[in-house]
Image 1 (tube, rainbow, N blue to C red):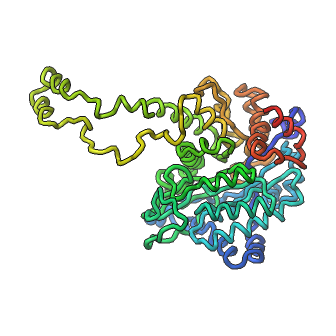
Image 2 (cartoon, rainbow, N blue to C red; image 1 turned 90 degrees about the vertical axis):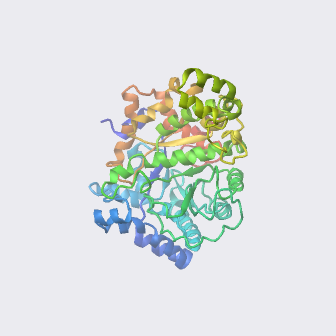
Amino acid sequence: MTTASNIRSELDHPVIDADGHWQEFRPVVEEALTKIGGEPAARAFRVNGERQRRSLAMSVDQRRARNMAQESFWGIPTRNTRDRATAMMPALAYERLDEFGIDFAVLFPTAGMGLTRGDDDEARVAGCRAFNIYQADLFAPFSDRITPAAMIPTHSPDEAIAELEHAVGELGFKVVMLNSMVERPVEQGAGFHGSTPPATGGVPALPYASAVGEAPPAEGSWIDMLGIDSAYDYDPLWRRCQELKVSPTFHRGSRGRAFRNSPSNFCYNHIGHFAAAGEAVCKAIFMGGVTRRFPDLRFGFLEGGVGFACLLYNDLIGHWNIRNGEALEYTDPANLDMDLMRELAEKYASESFANAVKRGAISRNNGADTNGGVDEIDDYAACGIQGREDFLELFVKPFYFGCEADDPANAWAFNRAFNPGNAEMNAMFGSDIGHFDVQDMADVLPEAFELVEDGKIDRKQFRRFVFDNPVRFWGESNPGFFDGTSVAEEARRVLAAQ
């Protein structure tokens, strides 16, 4: 295999890693969070990952009895000690970027991602605040080639905006990761749109989910995707993101839920779980009309690949063709000709069939007495779609998808012939260094480049994958994003060519 540094030397453009990871050394981080945010922040970090630890302490039979998933074990690289240290020590990661063929890297935490999800309001808010302060200081010396992602809790728009303003406005973060799946008790139903959530009604509290895994929904709970049917109006949050010039990124999974809840097989639970979560949130934001109301915002869905996006794009258009307001005329019960139905039944059906029709067993509403009480029967009304070309502006343009290097489906993003409207999905290279997916950090770029070597994409498409698309994702929201970095000049040229 050609080395990463050799590949980079032959490219006429930089390489941006849109989704790498660093690993927290728990004793050091917990001590730091205690100093910064006190006991609530330390509690948030200490409880974070509790479900994963409890799961791995059980037998298969014990997990089966408790409806708990087999969690990831041996999830951190060990055979290559230098890689393990690289994931934990930003200074070493910085030193090795050239070896990886990476010019600039966006690094997300590992355990820290779980801080945004807990049901303990005090701990969640304090934990994210302290962790972001810690990250800002930790990565400050490396800002020309590495930038970290701030953790933003989203149980309400107010708490999200508060931490967003602190992280971006005060600490100087350029990348933000928003919690995209909020567990809520059923009493806090969709469409609540209040400033204070209703009482939980005794719904049992959930522990913090694993940082890279998920917890199944508690009995009597539902998942808020921040878009369609949300408990709150999140438009103030999207507006503030736009004002602060940040592109929201999401990095949730769906492991341990529904069809990914095997008590014995981790890979069964892991395969496809990021894509499933990404699809759910992407679809909620789209069908909630968020991209119509905020056309200048860019949204990133990380680590789920782009394959689900290609399928979702096609499915959204296909369903719109047959379920938009005008198309529903074909299934409107009022259009059923009852006289003709009786006439045809008498001529072509059995006597019992015809008699049943005469008695009114079949009616204009086909046996259903209601449309479910919806005021708007067009499921795409919030999107304001006038024609298929609108999907290019409302889906293809604002959504970006983080892809791991070894995923062959990355090539689907560039196969315009199979995407309606000759669309190309915005795929972004994400190394996922620091996690078990990567056995050798120096092999990541060569694995991504195999798409070129195998003739799946050309060099211009590869450039968009590893450089142009990440530049556009962050730079269109914040033209100064790459100022002062090692890729500043090249990034400016990409943005100027838009």
